[in-house]
Amino acid sequence: MKRREFIRNTAAAMASMSVIGLASSFKKDGIPYRRLGKTGLDVSLIGVGGYHIGDRFISDETSVKLIREALDSGVNFLDNAWHYNDGRSETLMGKALLGGYREKAILMTKHHGRDIKTAEEHLEASLKRLQTDYLDLWQFHEIESMDSVEKIYSSGVLEYVQKKKAEGVIRHIGFTGHSRPEIHKAMIEKGFEWETVQMPLNVLDHHYLSFSQEIIPMLVERNIGIIGMKSVASGAIVKEGIATIEECLRFSMTLPVSTVVSGMNNLEHLRHNLEITRNFEPMTEDEIASLMSKTFDHAQGGKYEWYKDKV
Image (tube, rainbow, N blue to C red):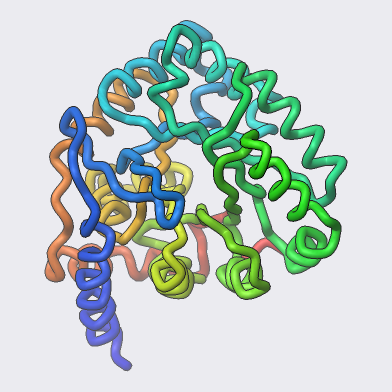
């Protein structure tokens, strides 16, 4: 198939897919909300990324203000992970959620438990730092090898998380990964009832080791909540002038995602992202085709998606 024909056919398919993602959409304080798959939760189309709110370039005060301003502005989905900035990200988010803000949030954090002991240690640490007695969503993080898949399914850790769900400590269970769609497929096809999956979704991904083309249809079919990340490929797409931040976010949001997690370490970034999200309109087939055409060459070989194809 010729490149032009491939791009046009893919753009048509993606435009058709977007209708699925928008079917349950509504607005709160001007922010679009979508259903998070089978969880039944409604989440904001933009989510606050947990890594950047704890990096060394942001003060404690600004981080807390950013999280609270996001929640006050209609955003409710918060991302985090046990290991982000050696725990600083969770600690700061915990501070931000005091004073009634916990009730405004759908709180998600991630862990590296491939066995019961590690999962238990990470869960206890995360709950303490976040100053909460439950998580709305807990995800197995960075599933980057088939070995990790096998350990998760054979070590008893899935039974552990199900027990914690039954106890109300965890409301919902998911997983994340950055590197290869085939690993996501294995996690899904082995049969656990995953409720969410988080993965890179951007204009470059669509051309190389594509999660959007290979994994999204599986998730839609199973009603698994789709969480997008790396909408600008860790900044590379915008820094290299491949596409604008508006184009990147709008492209990812046009997919049938529930939410797009965005890394923000200052209030200017937050407010810009809020403006883009409030003004969001799905891309048309022609807009998708045009964007895919201009990004095609940049995507080849995964040059700017360094996190893919890990060994």
